[in-house]
Length: 260
Image (cartoon, rainbow, N blue to C red; front, top):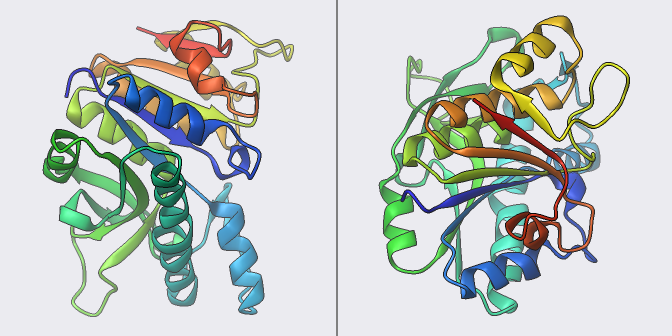
């Protein structure tokens, strides 16, 4: 498990002309063990709109009521998850799509009552990852997770968890060699808007506190800091660039490295 690389794919960087699938398959064929964690928030929003369900956000996170949880589960653990796993398999790789609830991989608790059925990671049980990796498969993980901690008897059994902290917690739990975020930006920017190639953990924490890092980058940085403490190399790169993932392994990806 020490040589595993955890890759977080953002929905905004994954499309029909994207090279990420090709890169994943190429890396697997070269013997690299991978765990893929994905999001898909924009697709969830589209499907909620089709169902006539309004989307509300608090501090950049989706408020998830019972109808929204059903749609998020169907889209993330169904459509998006199986699409990515199928693409990998069709391109010659070996992948199995799972969710955070399968094998109790991610045990979660309610994050905040005002957010509805949005969870935060309480525990990671990596047994199912070890089984799949040992059998030569890439686990493709949806962030829909098991509501296992402090759950009322009448509550749903699933929670919608942000994929960024799921990726960070998995990387930390398995002692991954590397955590790579494929994003829709070139890297982390300083106060003047310039991309910084290298950022210390202390600087990252200071930038979070001062507001230099904001919005959707916040959970990514926190996930990197979590994985960094467990010894992982943590990277945030522009997943829109052709073969960005292969470039990452060849030292040509640019982006930002967060170091201890």
